[in-house]
Length: 432
Image 1: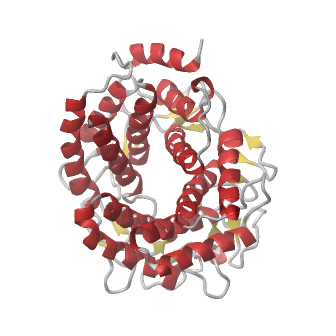
Image 2 (image 1 turned 120 degrees about the vertical axis):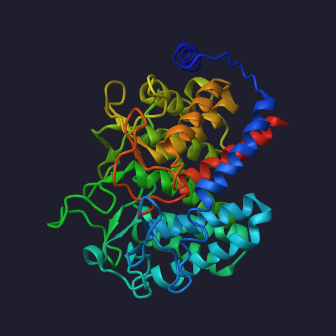
């Protein structure tokens, strides 16, 4: 039986609905203003302009559950890049907001270029203090995951603003990665690097894992799917033959080696890019389905027949094995084809689920009911009705976990903002 036919049969019992590519245009039209209002109230307003640090540059990072500012914390590369990207993307998607949000994005771009770029050794620091001075965290250790997000932010800022400073930062970031992190055409990128850009391969006394939790000397799915994201954006604004080759190489690596035929992904790899055992992350399955589709469109890769479509199989796999049939929403992670080990509901996983379900419904017609259920779960449980914004972590039944931050080095508007912007744009197309 073909995988997508099997998916349709299973989904009909898991999430009862008659899909068959049916699109309720009136329902699409009803959802658009609801989601636009949600985007404004719970994703944009909590951070903009609240987090804009006019005095010291960049964006203030740490806020408590009720959005009380923790002013003197560090400023990390991923967070600064994601808010810079978010503001540029809002400006592109909503022309009426462009003037305001382009100022926010350029403000963030200046901080990345002037404070987070290492003027002595090149590359970008993982963290600086509140005033923009390098923290020397782990002796100045750098990480390709964070640097990739800076490339992403600079590329999308340039797309929105044509700011030459953004293109300059994107191009020298790409070149630094080429010179210090790329491991040939088949083995992806080194990840943990010294302050000078040397590959860190051995376990350190301070920690067995690098800045994103990968054992030193190994490669991660997480870094490479976000390199796919950033290289797609960079190639779009600054296309050359070399950059297309690099994008195609990382696309092939994610498609052929990280993703598994039939659904799921390997999380970690050795230096020959052979997988090492670990769990499956349902949120990354969903996110990668979107990122592969985006890169496939940019590269104009001919679509493979549905039975072998990796993006479709990732969403199918996440729904079949990672969906909570009792309370709705996606679990965090589990064994690839068996037991769910972590039933926590995480904000970014739900956001990626919302985006991927509608994306794949537009392609296959199988996921409209699942998409609606995911949206209802987010509105009912993930949103903080009292203080605004999304709650980071929930128990499986939707109960919020105590003592959570609303914003920190890993929590920002990137996942949920991108999901809502993409969903709104897709609903508008479906409503026509």
